[in-house]
Structures are given as structure tokens and as C-alpha cells.
Image (cartoon, rainbow, N blue to C red; front, side, top):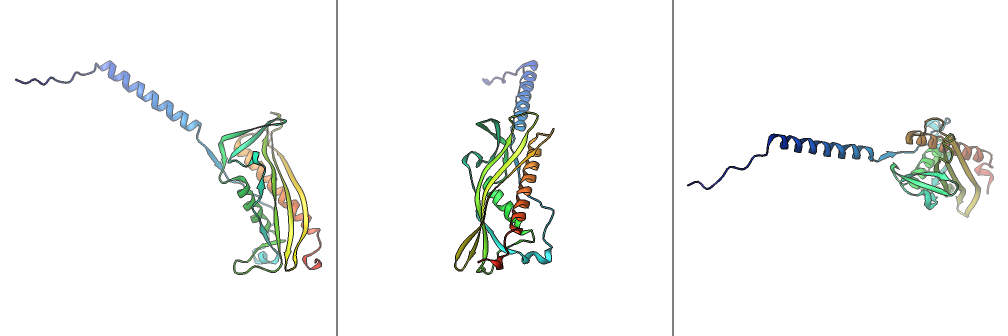
Length: 219
């Protein structure tokens, strides 16, 4: 005698209900994941006066030390200023690498791509080089006024000349830029404005350096 009984089948309407419920659940999860997906952005500073490739080594050798950064701006997420003393962080729009490291690299590449500076040769360290160091004191999107959103970047920078007898400070200055975003206040527009601000700071550094005595004049 066969004691096994066939498995009870679910009614058709119950099976359809389960399928639809599962589909809605996974669709909802997909929308949530798309909405909260992190976006990564890279900074740059393109100037309009690059060095001629044939004269890239004509400038004075330069090294850029890793810049420090104020703690409130050192995280990976974008920082928004929403009140006089209140900042918030965006966890879904991030820099590709920590901002202090990225800006240090950006500053180096932009400066050695100018006629005034050159990268230090890899096979030797010259007896006379320049060193840029300092601190990023502001890096945020100013949203205190919805009609005047802007990108803000500020750095307290020092340029020293290193030579066999020690070092000579040649420049100490705070460079700042505030670039309006206009009607487009998206994260992409914010990054573009920051890039323009960094390029403006690089141009100001080069302008100040041109007004200094030539390296052969000091010491």
C-alpha cells in the first residue's frame, strides 16, 4: 500500500500573489540602491600657460609636501556649509582619494607643468631645490544662500628654498578662491568650480613667484 501522498499545491491566485510581491520587493530594493549609490570625483587644476615640453626642465626643481587639512574638511565626503558655524557632510558624493592627498598631487602637477618649476630628477637630488608645504584651511560648498551657492577653497602655503647651507623662506601667504556655481548646483558643477578655484590659486602662486628675486640672486 502506497502511504505517500502528493504534495499539496498552492492555489493559482496565491502563487501569482507571491510572485508579484517578490517582484515589487526586489524592485524597491533596486531603486533604493540606485538612489544611495556613491559617486566618486577627481580634482584637477588646468592652467592656460603650460610649459613647452622641450623646456619642462628649465624651471627650478620643486617638491610639494603632503598638505595638512583642517579636520572638518579631511573626510572623503563633500562638505556643505549650511549656516554660519554649521557644516554637513555628503556621504554619497566623495573624492576619489582623501582631499589633502589629491590636492597635494594636483598642486604639484600644475606647478611643474609651468615654466617656473620642474620636477626633481629621479636619479639625483639637486643641491638647490624649492619646497612647497602648508595647510588646506577651507574646502566646502557654501549653501548658506540658495541663490548664491559657491565652491570655497583656501590654503595657507609656504615656499622654502633648500640649499647646502640650510633653507630660506621665500614665500608665506594664504591663497583663497570662491567660485559661484550659478544655477547649476549639482555635485558635478561643484567639482568643476573647485577645479577653477585650484587653477586660480596656482596662477596666483606663479604670479607671486615671478615677482621674487631669481634663484641666483639669493642667497
